[in-house]
Each structure stands twice: as C-alpha cells, then as structure tokens.
Length: 137
Image (cartoon, one colour):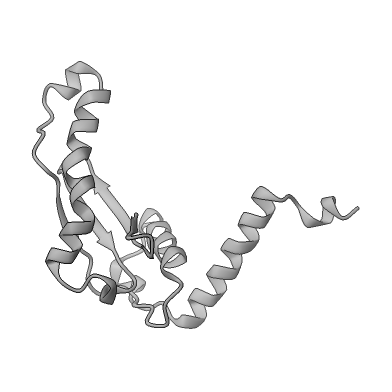
C-alpha cells in the first residue's frame, strides 16, 4: 500500500479475522498510531463493504461491516537510508509467504536490500521489456 505517494508498506490482510498486519521498513514516515490510522482508514473502512458486496450471498451474509483493525509488525528490518521501501515491502511479503519468521525479517541488511533490489529490477526488465539475449539477436 502506498502512503501519501511517498512510501510503500506491505500488508498482510486476514479476511477471516478482519485484521491487517503492516510491514513497514521505514517507520519514521508515520511515527504515531494516529498517523498510521490516517493512512489506513480508507482501507480499514471500505474493505468489509467490498467483501460484503462481491462475495456470494451465502458468505456475504455472515460478514460484518465493522472496520478492520491493524497492527504494525515489530522487529523487522528498518531501511534508514530511504528509497527502498517498495522492494522491502515486497520482500517482507515474499518472506511471509515462504513461511519465514518475522525474526528473520529483522536480520536483513542494507547489502541484502541492494541485492534483492537489483534482482527485482532485472525481473521487471525481463517481464516488461523482454529477455535481453533474445531482443539483441
């Protein structure tokens, strides 16, 4: 999720529990709970209504329209040099999907970020421009 057109965070949304975990690599962008709540409010309020509207009736009837709750995940890597929040948000979600513990997310280093940022850039190039070997033949 993009906050204020300047910062990306990863969101882990639990639809059953109506909760959202925020994976934020640069917490100084929104230091207070109120600042986080201000960024999150549109999603927290609208998501239950979207779910109720677009799920089959037999499921939607049991869905509450109460706003979701959120919590910021503690102990994850903090990228204090700025500019890497997007790749960090993606990496946190990848790590979670792979079953990697939050403690290990805190062990990332700036060098790790440089590495996966370069890998993401090459992945995007291949996906959107094409295989450079094939293109250059």
